[in-house]
Length: 390
Ligand code: GLA
Figure 1 (cartoon, rainbow, N blue to C red):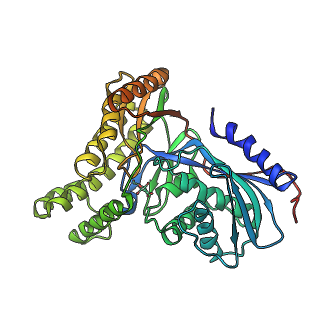
Figure 2 (figure 1 turned 60 degrees about the vertical axis):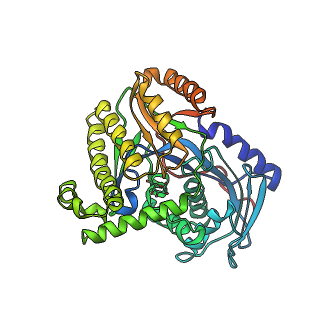
Figure 3 (figure 1 turned 180 degrees about the horizontal axis):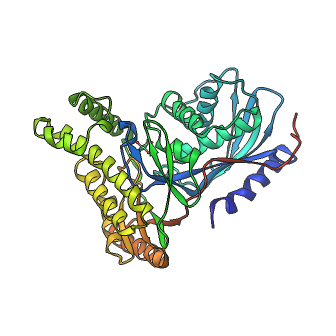
């Protein structure tokens, strides 16, 4: 079952029960999986994610006051955002919505709304459930307040919310793909110019997400430490970002570098190169080459960037032993969460069942495996022509 089929009716039912009458709009935004280009976005490099068929939905209608009243079916809680007096309440799901309101409010006058939200992007699994909530909220505000939706601008706004309001120092990848994803395609994103190019998935292949059932701990400090080291490495090469260092330029001076900085920089420089090659291989329909590059990416993240963990290495190893697997790697920030595999579509179900069973037997954990479809970025649908609550 794809996302909307399960959560769509649930948000509508709950909306009616809670607020009476129906919503005016339903906004939705997807989670994502990154095929390749990991820890390259904050180095101004390239990434190649796709939006997945798991998403966050918000059914909503305008309010006459300047409040956002939002009920979450996932958390069983209702929260209110006072648009004229926003205060952080600590670690809470509403902060992603409030953060977007705060970031938008600097540019445009906001109006109140009430709604119900639910999602089926697993939380904390590295599939960007928070970016999905941010972009669904941004879509909700764009509908209620009547401002134009510009995907790049909204992705930057959501990133600002996450960096400055929520306090997570992420790059732009998750917000960009949730805002601008294209059905049936991965998106090559230039994280410096924010130019995007849709790249078709090779016919006969399927993308499979392998959730190790481990969750990342201490990820913020390790992430920030990696970012800091990448900036120091760019300083070593006297360039604005590691994006500006070619593989050859890196190799020419690698011996002069501190060993840890050398490994971190080597990952980023070679990963950017792999991402561009993977995009060309996808265009050419060369699934075997994409798979090979994914395998190399995993080794680089494990050995040079040191953001993998035993369970991710295990599931990637098990995945590759299946004859239908073109390649597999950890995906997202690392330290836990998910891996991604490119497999032959005709054997995807067998692949999913076999990998889950063998991983569970090897680790005592319960893997969750999703064969997923590349879906469209954030959208909003009008479901009633006359706002009911104003
Ligand atoms: C997290 C961040 C992204 C990106 C990835 C690693 O998902 O939110 O911006 O840096 O990690 O590629």
